[in-house]
Image 1 (cartoon, rainbow, N blue to C red):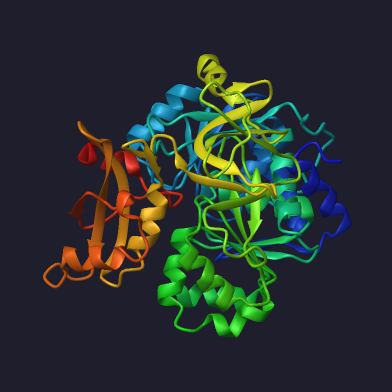
Image 2: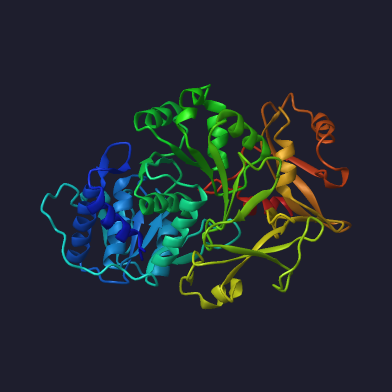
Length: 489
């Protein structure tokens, strides 16, 4: 059994050296070529004086070079710290201050008080064999620090070990029933946990990943799918929405070659589920649930389990999930007795980087305790209604903002929407709805409410509506509710 992802890369370089490992928009690399480059970059790290447990920040370039820099860090026992492409200078400085990173490998020019090196200037063309004797990292060694995008407050550094990454990769590998010859398209940012963990799963499986920068260039995306005979696709709900609007029937040309599609970062709406089920009638369709702290902890194959709105499926290979009360005591939950979800397993983070008190506030007895409210039904399926902070408490009635949003999006005049709680002296909280409409002059609020009466209970109906130009989203496709809460309060 592998103790680290880089150990898997080394093994497959011996077993299947000519098999493709990584393909991006410029290059493609076999397992042998990847392993050679990992050793080459690791040698460069040594020449730069980097030592085990040093932190190295790497700007995401969404290509093979970024991932090879990651594996080279792992090989040397260096802590990999990915940052978003073209992240703000303030964010870079904050992460630097937190990690005390010794090097910043970047694509963008930054004015920061640390040693920087352009990713293009690394020795990618060096032909000399540089593999030496070494020890692979141990399971308990820290592999990376992943910084959240701060949707609910200040961004936090999440410390992940090599053992965590193996368990996470297995959750994906077994959760998708990944085949040996899998070729997976990953358009989601590799600087964030979902895309990165999809890569780890394929590497652990000895498969191939195809890397693209999003899916907005639809023709290019489909050209890559056809050219490299992609068999699986990793998407977010927002990426599914883009493809649904812009694909123009192109799915007909490739749907039979797709073994599965996996969706993450957020729950998928019932409309988008139906779109995928109709478009890919022979494919397995998965919606994963988890967090950066406790990733890929449950999965639902909604191509088989239909009509389960809000369902996140059942625990994955290495996960155990329970529902608790406010005091973290396990409860027998139901649709009428909801609680808070908690997950246990080897995929759980080591902790928040250098923040033991914060770690202790959400971790206890091997469990990561979340703010996600939900329940487990009699068949063992888990359901999520939303985050505790997002759930709207209207006269004692718990209202899921996602339930409202899903119904509102069905109205033809709505382009996008988001619902947040607004304080109210009489009711505690009321649902406030932000909407983006197709035509402000033609839009009539009363007509929208008339439509909503067909799918939303009267006591869950939005009480305030505000038209805005754009709904804010995080880098990984989640509604940035905190940006709306100030208005919603």
